[in-house]
Image 1: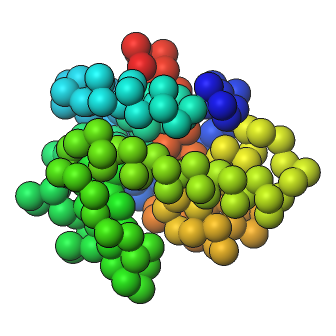
Image 2 (image 1 turned 60 degrees about the vertical axis):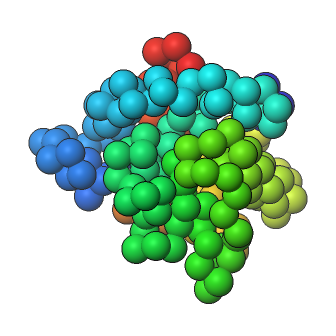
Length: 187
């Protein structure tokens, strides 16, 4: 793939707050893995689309699956394709709020077109973080890009606090841990 492997990115996994989505009695990498596994049955419905978009964009399919797991629980948390109180669209929750990402939703909520749009946004942010922090390793740039996908690159100030402003204070760490689970389990 064109970017660093998620398997080489350090991660602390899900925060306690995030792990409580599933009422887990623990947090960290183990919680992220449990949530990814919980979503894996639904995720199988999107495998061919995820693999296709991953091949087209150079993003590991496991990372796309992890973002889908985090953002929409593989579609389970959506209402007619919408989430975040109507501010985000599709499996990967493209921000359509004019005061947020301001994107126009493309394709149906579970389409390859949607996945391609959202993955393109991720690639955009990885590239922005790469330019903003040229001395970071490729793994750090990938993790920073994942955090920026959640909150914008203007909110990434240092690697040590990459998730300081993300949802749950753990977005990139949780997504990386979920991606590692998906990578180890067939994506």
